Length: 148
Image (cartoon, rainbow, N blue to C red; front, side, top):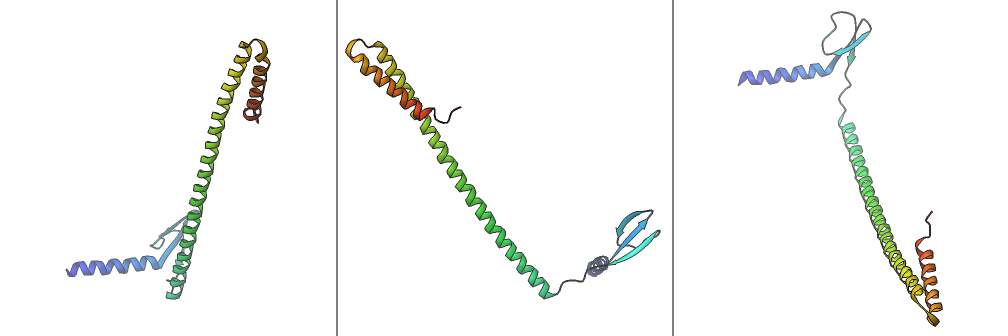
């Protein structure tokens, strides 16, 4: 039990000592850093930064908390924007599907009206041709707009 306490105490002392001093060694133009002094070459002892005081730790904690809150707000905004864009995209795709269905129906109507006009004889031929022409105009105005 005493050996464990002594070992823990020596580890703590070694850790504190290792954190306190760092050595910069330059040997032949090559720079290395370590916790032991250089045996050869040029040596520079680097002092460790002092531990921050309670006020500095509290201020840093406050900044971290504010940064975390800002990050969470930005994430909520990003997710809201993504949901809005996805909903808009879905509405646009649904409108495109509805337009395609409507155009398919107009195409069928135009084809049938043309077939009926071709099969007509006599007095009703002019009415059938007018219906076919109007169906073709409806299809052209609603379905071929914007196509290259």
